[in-house]
Length: 86
Image 1 (cartoon, rainbow, N blue to C red):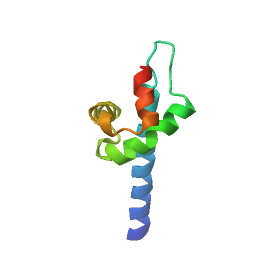
Image 2: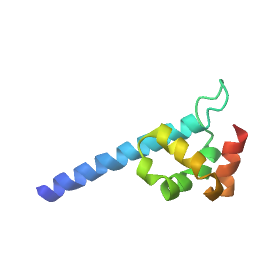
Image 3: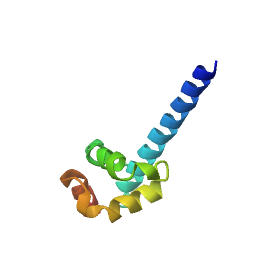
Image 4: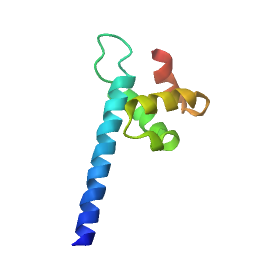
């Protein structure tokens, strides 16, 4: 029973992290007033960097954005290009 509860708790945590990451990526790509969410390409570009550089900030979307900006020199070329578009 305890193992089942631990797995359920872990699934909930992963689900919350995934939701927060999705929200972050939507906010990240909302550089213009018309943009409501990032393109699939923008999400694919930055997701690995979020996990590599800013995993400790998940699920806080604002903190993730700040972290990625602070880590600008370490961003992958693809994710750096997303930030340059803004």
